[in-house]
Length: 252
Image (cartoon, rainbow, N blue to C red):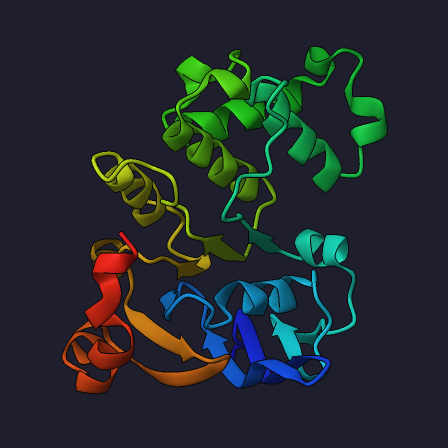
């Protein structure tokens, strides 16, 4: 039997007496398209930080492609195929779009110390970076500083950076956050067109995005898994509507 792309087992995280993650178990098979939803303060981003190594769990374990990575450093998890984006983008705004992608590729291949001789010295890096930009329709922005891009396109650059890590598992933390609703479909179209073998977990408040993207949905409430199911099951779950979907007007 093939190991799951990502498996979270009985994960707990306490900050003193405050329990922010409570016995969370979650499995992403290869090619999964799962959404993680829940009210503000449910612990969604904390869970992502535990999975990626930004936080250490109080107990429980995280497995990537059948290997226990609970004690593996964050950078090493990325090199093993676990990539993420953030609620607020982490781009180098003063560098060009192309330079941001090239830096990621250089870091991935352990060549960052030799990469800038200048940026175009390694043709293979430039070519791969342009391939990623082409797939996200960002080639026309390649030589623009990131700070000159509209926020929606900056989010696409962040996804390009995540993809440049050659992930097997991709965690998207509110990829449409800050993007005008008229443009959020662009983010979704890009995500929907990603390599079908990549397992994707998306945190998103926009339920239109969630229901269009996800094949399975996990609902997190007060740091614990409240329920999970197909989009149709979640949509028709009266308890989910009471604790979360009924307040969607407050999330935007």
